[in-house]
Image (cartoon, rainbow, N blue to C red; front, side):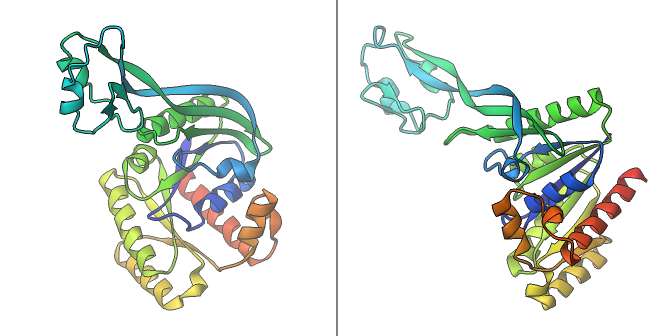
Length: 286
């Protein structure tokens, strides 16, 4: 079983649309949406949820009013300003537990926090594991790790060849959690100055974790000078720019229809994505 993650240094480069197309092209796979802070792969794949699970992570302080003597010590010492009128604001509370340690009557306890939900679903392209983090919740790196673990378990139990993951943008904790230990990373970029800069950052992260990478330049024809800069950069870094996909409204139309791009287009866009998947599958096989 091989694991592919599709990443981008910034949002809006088109990685989810490309993952959805891979879902239609690849056989024997499980799909995984690791962008738990803003999951959207399910909008295209239209899954039917089979299992719905709570995700518990982190803690929040709770004050027992019967035990509280209103000494005001917790309010004075909480550095996150999360306690007012002897009540804890769960949004502001960072779960550090300091207030529970210094409370003289031991009226403050730390309660586990339900941070979100994760799902096992069926799509017409195969199983999909995805999640939704709660509003203002953290620990998304832990939720990504859980989603990936469940996807691998399904791939192993069903004897599937691939886990294809839609990764989060950027280089933060969720990206690290989605990247570590994968077989290959596809880095989707666009020919803008910020796109070039963010490509360099996410490539450095791949090298840190020893993950081989390919580059896909989406919307390459909106600035062909920057496209050549990206190609030159890839050449200097020993990377393969595996695909150049032109700008086309078919991406937006496919999102509106809720279908992958390759099923909404049979022109050069679909052929570019099909060729990209063939290159990836050959690398994973080899």
